[in-house]
Image (cartoon, rainbow, N blue to C red; front, side):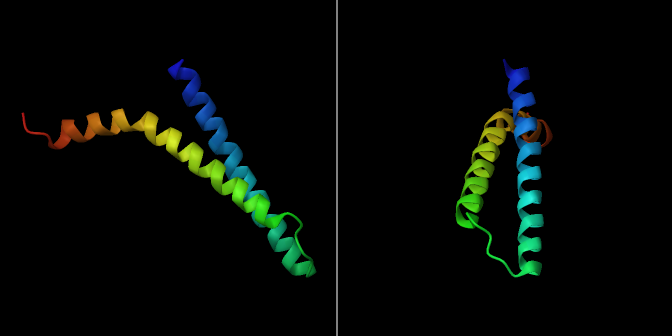
Length: 77
């Protein structure tokens, strides 16, 4: 199950990067054409919420590994 979590987390991260990139491209295109981007607030809030969720999931799954690494470097024995 843990292996699938990493696959889905990586896929979600890649899709979020693509989403933010497409948003930035569309924003630049609309600024150059001096048009209004419909649904801009909804798009930004959805991308931001999804980024926070994926970041939280990644942190929860990385925390044990980071904690173990930090302890192997600096914890007293």
